[in-house]
Structures are given as structure tokens and as C-alpha cells.
Length: 338
Image (cartoon, rainbow, N blue to C red):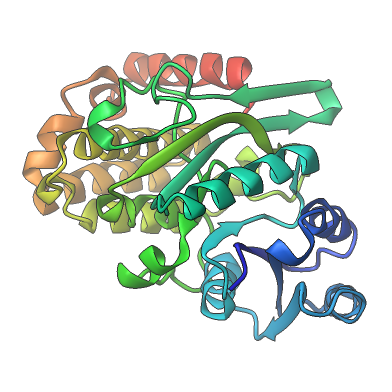
């Protein structure tokens, strides 16, 4: 069995996918790199994937599928994974290869000691070359370092400290046991990838190392603000699916608390995008989201609405909306997340 399966969803990614693949090859036979061509038509993504498969047999696997979107590509990667652990690497991002070697060594040590943890967490870096900015997101004030721990040992997460797809390595079987299936033709499913399995996570490990480099700057990138607004219906769909997950039924108090915090953040982001669009249609969609939340899960809605981020996101007055946008803009400048 491989130690780590790395799924790389690719859609017309010929210009940059090699960088992602090369950054994972450093692990040699310990890694399985699953390049998933999501029905690319505009370039030779599939051919590049096949070339790597031929050059690195037993390490790189190239899988073609009809276009199903990022979520379906992750599903395909998981279905083909044989590694003990599973990580997603977007095709325009990359690993710090030296850190990846250290992560693999730590995982092997944990497995040898009988500590096959459910979730292994590292830092990630918002990398924005156009502004010469690299902003790391770390968890040193939240999680114990270099030891196996449980949710009970975590401390309060700050608003910017979210466990994203970029920071998490899941035990492969856990993802299968919880029945994870991401929706087709939907962007922003990386939120679901991390969020839905969290109640199943019992053991965690945090390594204070900047593994994942998250590229920010392409005009067509899914996290580009204009692109996000144009795809607001998909963002809202993901948001509703997270609301549908009965977070109040999660037994572990600190896990539940973190999930509520993350759900609050995503509802706030959806609300901000609706406000920034400036259209009556999208403002109505914002109000519909909060109405759905209140009716679907009133207990969780009450918790989320008890803090400024959740409460403020529901403002309808011009002054209230300006305040929400000002807070968002400040966070955007500090953490450079799009």
C-alpha cells in the first residue's frame, strides 16, 4: 500500500499542471499521484498526464473522465486511491517539496507507532506573486504541535484560521467510511470536502510546516471575486449543503464549535458576494439563504446569529451592508485570500 495518494484535478491545465506534479514526485514510491483529466478540450492536459504516467509507472496514474467539475474529479481521485492517506492538490498549486518529505517521514513514524491518525494538518500559504506576497496560515495558537491529539485539546480558532482543503490530509478509509461524495458541476466543493468528514475525525496531528502553496492571481481562477459572484448560485448550493449537515448533532463539543464557526464564515462570504454584486436578484438570494438556514436548522441558526459575523451578514440597511463590506475588505487586505 502507498503511504499517500495525491489527487490532482485538471481541467485545461496544461500551462501549469507539471509544476504541481513535479512537486509531489519527490516522495518516489511512497506517493501515488492521480492526475484526473476532467474532460479537457482546449489543450493537451490529458497527453501531459499520460506522459507522466509513462515516465513514472507505479507512481503517476492518469485517469480521464467526462467533464464533471472539480468535485467529481476529487471523487474519481478518491475512487482510484490506494494510499493510506489522501490529499488533494489543485493543478495550479504546488507543494514545498522539502516540507512534503518531512510530512511523509512523520506519517511513516506515526503509522509505525500504531498512530494512524484520522487527520494530519499542516500550514498553507496564500501565494500572490503579482503583489510579491506570501501569507501563511498557521495554527500554532490552536493545536498542540508534533503530537497526536483530540478535539478536546484544541483552542479557539481565529476568524482567518480555517481548516481548508489545502491544510488537511485525511485518512483515506475515513473518507470512504463517511460516504463522501461531492456534487458534480459545482465549484467551491473544497468546503464540503473538509467539512462533511469532520464529525468522524477522532485523532488529529498538527505539524507546523508550510506545505501547501496556494496560488492567487489568475483572472479565471475560481476564487477571483468577479468569478465567484458570477457563480454565486454554486456557492449558495454548497452553503445549503453545509447547512443540511446537522452540525448540532455532532457529539464532540469542540468539533461542533469549530464547524459552527466555519459555517458562519461561509454564510458571511456568500452574503458579502451577494451584496458586492449590487443586484436586487442576488440580495434576494442572500435573504433566501438566511431564511433557509433559520427554517432548516433553527438551533444552529441561533448559534451562528449570536456573533457579529453571522448577525452582521444579515443586515439589510445600506449602512449595515457598508459595514459588512468594510470588515470583509480589511480581512481581504490582511490575508490576501483572493
